[in-house]
Length: 125
Image (cartoon, rainbow, N blue to C red; front, side, top):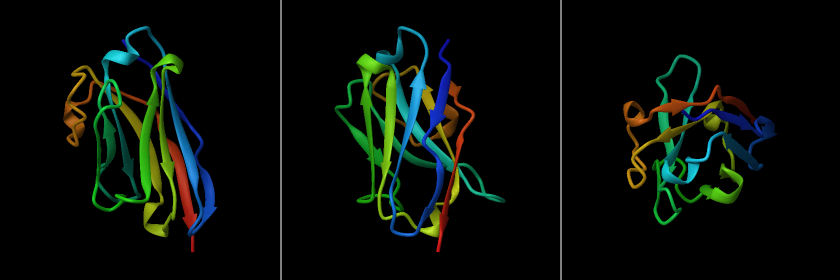
C-alpha cells in the first residue's frame, strides 16, 4: 500500500514556473514507476509525464515536452514535476500516481495502482 500526497500547486502568471512534489509513504517507493496526470474542468484526466523506478527513463505528453521535467529522489520518497513556461491551458488539478511495475512509466491511467488527491494549478493570462 502506498499513500501519495501532492503539494506545490498554486496561482501563477503565464510564463511562470511551479514545482510540484509528491511525497509517498511506505518503504517500497523505489520499486514503483511514477506518473503525473492532470484534469481540467469538463475534461478527461490526461497523462503529463512518467518516470521509471530508478529515474533512468522519462516520458512526456507532447503538450508539455520541453517545458516540464519529471524527476524523483528515492531517498526522500518523492517525485517532482518542474513546470516552466506555463500556459493558461496548463490549468488543472495535477495528481501523481504509482504503478507497481517498476519499468512501466505508462501513459495509461488505468495501469496505475495508487493515486494522490491532487493539487490545483491555475495559470492566469
